[in-house]
Image (tube, rainbow, N blue to C red; front, side):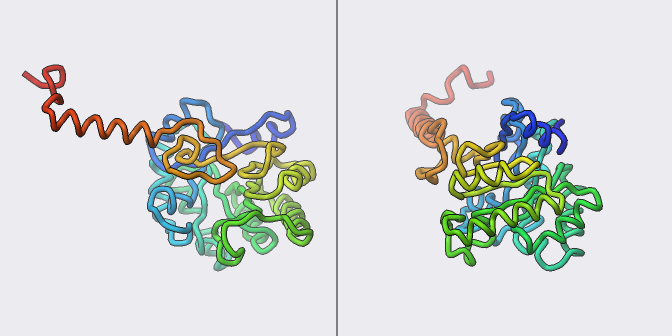
Length: 263
């Protein structure tokens, strides 16, 4: 199993890191079989699994539930678990308690929290007690209302300076890597070159140290995908066609035939 040192070594050796966000046993099993470096149990499960409009309603118990299933499916893969909205923002004690629950109950290797300078003290505390932390800058979904929606960040000079400043602060606070989401590629490249820790991009160009996508997006489960998603297959279409075929065969009494029947 990889460790945070493997992430740091990958950056120094210029070896790209692959991370997939997924939420259950079977998909984690397939990620491990494919040799994916890291699985993120993201609070995006609220939108992908639960059909919500944002990640905000996702609870700590729900994240833990899904992370347990992912660990069973991928026992030898580095797993990061999102700390959901308001599970770490209240104060350091709450953050420690909730991060501790995630680590103890799921077998995860690290937690991920969103934000910059405002959560640096929480990062420092978690790292000081042995909990590895992945940072997250740019489009931070838990701040969707404060950001004015799901829009690209870092386009203005002020936003650019803030992201660079926050990245440096997070590195100093002790994060072992940072997700950069929905920022211009040149800014992502600049941040990546400034840091000694790896960056993982999503909608941030190809000059980051690694890339992450949501499994359900990249395999084409949903009709539409964000601009930054490459659809590697159209699983949604194939699944619907299979279901239609099943329905037709049942209605025509073609299934089950003798091959699928106990005598």
